[in-house]
Length: 329
Image (cartoon, rainbow, N blue to C red):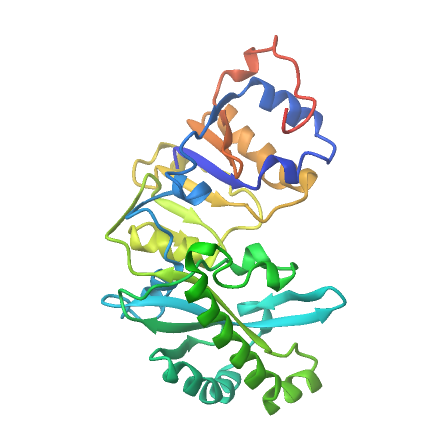
């Protein structure tokens, strides 16, 4: 590879941790930039992929990857979820892959849920145990849905469908459907079997990712390493080579450094990282070593708040710049 970008969480999520001295010096000497367009309205992922029209239809993208039949319909994810009531409401504690569902679980739950969706004219299926889909007419009016990653650990009532006033009527329709599904799942005998086996029950669904396949998706990156299924599916629509995220920075070999076909621009998705010391040890320090050895032409640290630090050879001579006191300085 010739350039590399690390997708990182917002600086505020890491700023309260002690800043490693070498990192404080390195970032002070780096070039800085900010994204005034907020990824063309799509946030950090909009800086990775150029999507037309400007939307992020996760359900359609993952459906296309899973089955290949997404064209000609709108899609909504209705992923299995575990919600636990508490004194102040109910919290989303797990969803999708975290529930460790099997095909037998799907075969037990879906026949009980399908009549609810059939009565509203929608089809429910689950080509993968952790990814459940609702097929919708292309012109269906939908409320605002929130990603489960945003709601995880929060009170679900703050993230129910259609919280915005503009889609209040549609929101009520989907909240009613959700309530009916929760009753069916709560009473389903399969959940008693799961709890007896030490597994969390599936007592709710999480609606999210609505949309149709985008007209066009492109990217400046030739390789993207991510464990995020949404980013992976959208990147595949752009024809990008997608791979799982490695545990540490993959040091650039001499052959990769000089090759013109080894993925000129690569991106690594580290938005989940919360330990600054481990990030420095496993990723930032070895990445910087490759930059200084000129095995990389440039490396960009892209933070979710729109700020970025660009590392390049020769910046070590900017010795007059004082070390940063904190990451969000």
